[in-house]
Length: 331
Image (cartoon, rainbow, N blue to C red; front, side, top):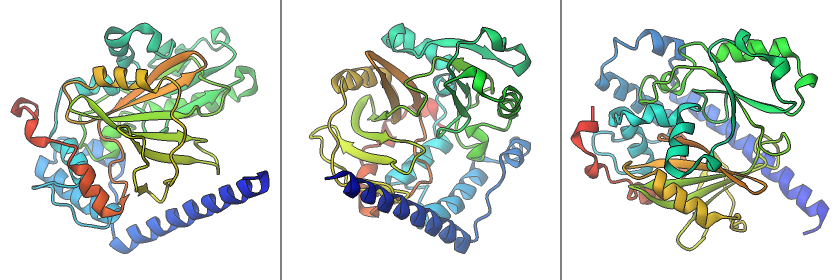
C-alpha cells in the first residue's frame, strides 16, 4: 500500500469512528438516560443499597449497550463485567488499581525491573519540587482511568507550570475516581494522589498491550497503537492462535492481525502470574526499548462499552466463571 492509500485509509477510519461516536451519543439521548455525576455519587455513597446501584447500572447499560442486561442471571461478557463491579469485593482490588500502590505489588510478584520508575507521589501540588524534576516525566492520578488524568511532559521548561498544577489539583477531588464515575459500583476505593514517574517513549502515548486474563489464564489481547490520534488502531486478538476476534467496540476494530509484539511470551507469563486468584483482570504492558513494564491492572475493563456483534459478547461471556468466586468476596 502506497503512502496516499495509507493516508486515505486512515482518514476513512477516522471518519467512521467520528460517525460512530455521534451515533452512540444520539442513541443514548434517545434512551433518555441521564448519568449521575461523580460528585452526586460521592454524596449519595451511604444512601444507596446494592440493589439500587444495580438498577442504575441496568438503566445505564441499556443506554450504552442497547440491550437491557440480565444482571440477576448474567451471561454476556458485558453483563458479567457489570455484575463483578457490583458484587465482587476482593479487598486486594483497591491496592492493585492504585497507580502507586500497585508498583509495590508488581515488584514483589515479578520484579522491580517491570515497574515504571517512580519519581514521587504527592497529596498536594505545592509539595512538588518542580526544579528538581527531570526534564521529561509523566504525571498521573493514583485513581485515573481510561487514559484520563494523565499528562505527558516531554519538556518540563516548555509547559505552563501553573496550568499544570491547576489540572492536577482537580485530580485530588475525593469524587474524581473510577469508583464514583461508575456510581459506586467498583471496589476501587482509591485515595487520589499525584504520581510523577518516568516518561516512557518519546513523549507520545506508547503502544498498549492489554492482556485479558480469566482465573489466572490470559485468553486474548487488545493492542492499541497511536492513541489520541486519527491513526488510532485497536485490535482484539485471541492468544491461542493469534487470530483477530471478529468484534468492534465503540465502532473501533480492525480485521487484520498485527505482528506479534516483541516479548509477547514474556508478557503472557507475567500476566499469568499477576492474575492468579481473580475471575477476570486485565494486565497492561508497555515496551520501552529493552524495558518491559507493567502499566496497570484493571478489574472492570470496557464496562458499558458495547461489543458488536452481540453474539460475540455472549461468546466472550463464557470466559468468566462467576460460580468459582468464593462467597467471602461477594456482596
